[in-house]
Length: 275
Ligand code: FE
Image (cartoon, rainbow, N blue to C red; front, side, top):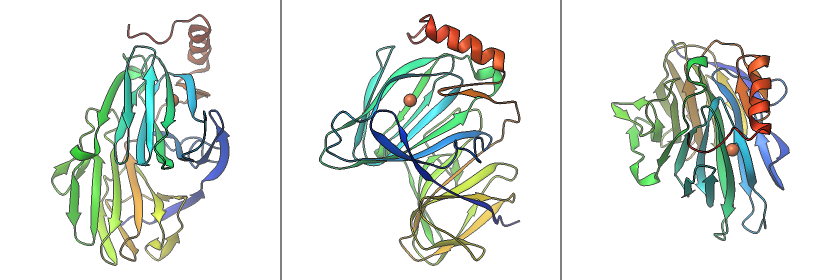
């Protein structure tokens, strides 16, 4: 069955980090959780944004996924891990029981434009040790299909498998450009799935979705996206977890008690380090 658009939800500009404006769709009032997704920010940091970025902050209980379109971000964390991601690169960080990190743009003369997605972890994995998958653009396959080309970050498409592996919600994450007027893409039935417009002129089953807008799809096993050649969008999907979500800033657990324990751990310095 072909999926239709169930809900359109526009990203809204809001302050985040230090001096940064993000365009948030998932993770704001009216769309706090789109199980298993907890947040989606489109970030655009001007090349000259001196000192603006995301200085040291903690995470626990979920995964943060950064995908850069242009510019560079440098990442450092409490266990000594350090890396820079540039255009087309992905960092899939499983915070698990806790990490403290900073994410700051590197002055390249180009705007740092990218996305951050938060993916929830099931209760059994919330306290696992932190883990990184840093994927360089050169190892992300481009899948050519009828009417589209797709950079496949995670999941399966036409026999290709994206480089991000072993994630609880079996995610699909692709950056897709139409090469003709229409493309049919498979989507796992029962999985939460949405599109996010990057280059305009897109529609699904006759319903247009603008850039900077989340198009949440109704259930089905495929989606037919129409538009002009060059129209571009992210398509992201994952298996819903179906557990209670207790959320406080950068901490996402299952119960209020676990959040209180997490805040205690943070206040008492039991965060970070690799152990
Ligand atoms: Fe972070």
